[in-house]
Length: 217
Length: 272
Image (cartoon, rainbow over all chains, first blue to last red; front, side):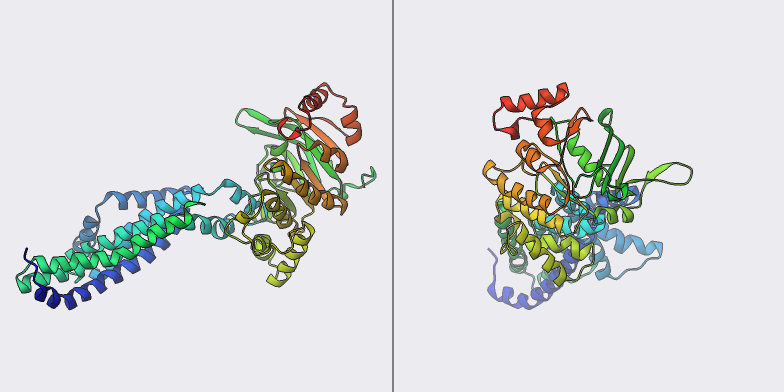
């Protein structure tokens, strides 16, 4: 074993700086992905074919293209078409788009799991479709799918490691930098893995807490 | 008030030659029915006779194919446009008409994420645009009437089926509808909880609410309704005074239906 405490401790400040970047990207993309997911989920079941098939196309593309390829395409591919984007812009675009696609499918399933009588009752009281969706269906659907959304967020936190390929000094890249600087591979990567665990554990706990809470309903 | 002289303007619900089919299955075959203000009409009949579909057509939750439904003289659902072609009315107009039709469902359909009070004020505030305080006042008034004063902060899941159904009645009443539709509202209830719901409906009938009640509760139909409609095969087979209908049904199918109920004893709920 090649673990050296002094290298590990010396690496920590740099790793924590990287962790802050990763956490920030994750947080913004989780929030944006949630917003996209709500809109996408409603579009997926819309009677309007443009919205329905548009959302389906978006979800299919994002699920079928590897995130790494999306990142590379946006960062290295687009400039040849004259579109230059900042690395952070690319990272947030790609991460929220992928997360949004998965959340879209989760929200869609959530909406479809709500009893049809709820829409019927809301419409019978004179509510419009969008009022009923906003005030009656979505609040119930979102509550029901919070555990899978948390699970998806956990995946997203780990996926942020891919942004190290587009020059962003995230947690993984900070580890790589320490590795070259200290000529030691074990200690920095142990630190990187440990910090990823610390970032994702709260989500694991939140997930099981939510599952316990909503199990009986 | 079942006076024959009532003008058509005093007919909250007029149904004319209503046809409705699901695919090739004709569920309603030219139903006509006029309900006077303050009248309580009970619709009975075997399952699959089209009773519930008829009710769902009145607020156009189930779009019908042919015929008219007039709410206080105004057509709902399909309207004639120039050139004699019928088309679906705008959602906005439809929503406006639906406010005037209260409906209570077999499965209560309360909003489980909202408290009892929030369930009742939801539509008055967000559909009618009533100030919150006024809506709450209305809600408390209706809750008292159905005997659930003090349950404002409970969630539907914490209430018994009978209590939930009474909240559903209060929720519909808070919109101050012109007519109330009841769709087998006691069928999902445990037998010991049926009475409390029927009592609320009886009170409503005594207050002069116009009601159309699809029910398997023959005692309720006999005692509370002003008129009984017997439906079978998508048609109105027989219609008349409850006492007369139950003691002396005219048609073979009504006779067979009532006989079948009697042979099942008092358990009228499962008979049809």
